Length: 68
Image (tube, rainbow, N blue to C red; front, side, top):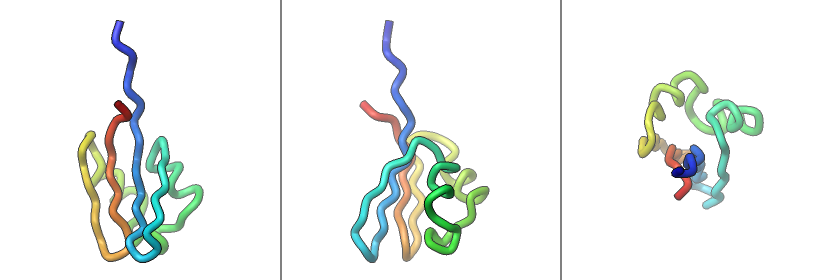
């Protein structure tokens, strides 16, 4: 039986060169605001609708993927 791979959302802050990892989009917004990220929660959910999606703006690069 193949083990299910966990979803991960990688947030890279461009200015500070910080990387943070979350299990969901809602978990990101418990720690950061839409102003911090430059995008609202519902809009980000739309951008990251499937694995491999990338959202990029002047503040952050956010990637949805699965752990190997």
